[in-house]
Image 1 (tube, rainbow, N blue to C red):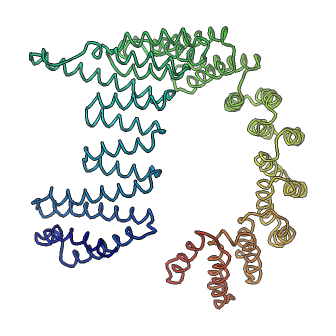
Image 2 (image 1 turned 30 degrees about the vertical axis):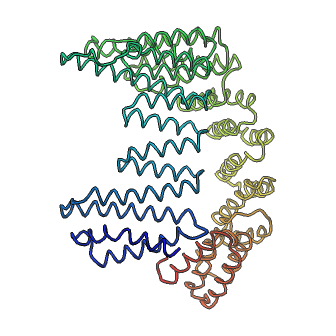
Image 3 (image 1 turned 45 degrees about the vertical axis):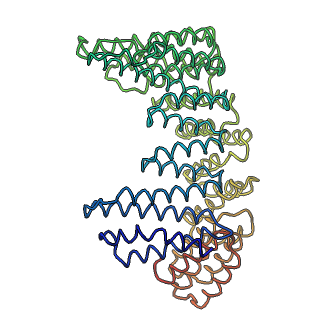
Length: 598
């Protein structure tokens, strides 16, 4: 192994001597480079080589190349630049190749090599990398697209890009993204050739020898891609994606019309088709701002457009009476309602349209859960709390398991200071599953705490909450219970509650940390109590929380009654109990603590 390493170091000597001779590096720096490279070479020559060893070597070489580049600029010396840089770049390629051959499935390693090639303009090498990468990972459409884009945009080779897309479609015949990017590539190629032809004609040059296929210029190849794609990939969304790509090119009016006509025929019952058709009304050509007689005329024109959109949605609902269609219509109404306008008439019309849509969807029993939330929120914002209560009742009857709707209903009732709040909480807990009930418990105890002379009832709520079978609810409410006891009844009450709960699992680390914080806030902080709290916390979380051990050690060091001699024992216990990466984290932070940097 030593002979191979020595030979590789000797191969570097001419370039290093050259760098020293011209003053780019000092003799001391050259020695440091040789020493570092020797160590890195030995690491990658070991029998059990690690991926990190290659990564570190590559990173060192890249850093060296960057430093060399900056120093050349600083002293203005560029003699033999290509010769020396080429050698270093080739070494980096070799290291990357060895690493990717050994760890073929590590995509991040491949992508790092691709990024390096792009930065240092290694086109020929990048082509080889993509070939090797696609041979190993043909199952990833994104890699095919990346390679084809590089061929088209960087190498300006439409033939190579087309070849890659066709190969990609053999592996991924049902990939919408591959078809979309292939369609885009063919349109880009057509646009490029049209521009080239126009420039030659403007320069009055003979284009007889130049081969410009009319099929490509007119977008016929992209039409073939489109026709094939819609036969393979079904759904209005894919169709609309192709249409949006076609709209980016100004010579595709006929193709756009064809796509739109097919969309209406093939996906007449798809809500997305109607959504697109309705929103097209907003894009209808209007006079420029300066051509309007007044702001009122502009607002009136916008109102007419929105009304036409609304009519398209309403027509769609006669044939596509689905929840998804209502959802899209109400989403449109909400978007327009939230847009700012100085016209009160337009804003009133938008509000009327929105709430009419909410009501009709509700009556049709097709209003989605999220839209009920929006409806109630808008009513509350407009100060219509009473109607909001009625709607929230209907919403929770339909979506009884929705925590968000129950919370909204309760928040409205609390704001109205209704006497029904308690009974609605009870009803909510009957419908909502235990694992999702934490927000309800939080709201309930907050509501109870704000009521006057209700301390005993609040405590009974906490005692009930900590007995919930779901661990997330139980642990969170224990923390809140302890905090509430300290805020309302002081230290003795908090300590009493902690004592009653410290054997009642499950716990969270924050439960113990809260009690430690409470103890430290006392005028006479009892170190024995602190030790008890830390010991109980470590019993539960000592194997996975290195910071807990460090806090305990710092407490012994900083407390007036602490025992610094206990730190050694705590360190030994931590090393025995901690697991995995937590050991290294603890050792690093403990070292910083000893040096005074933590």
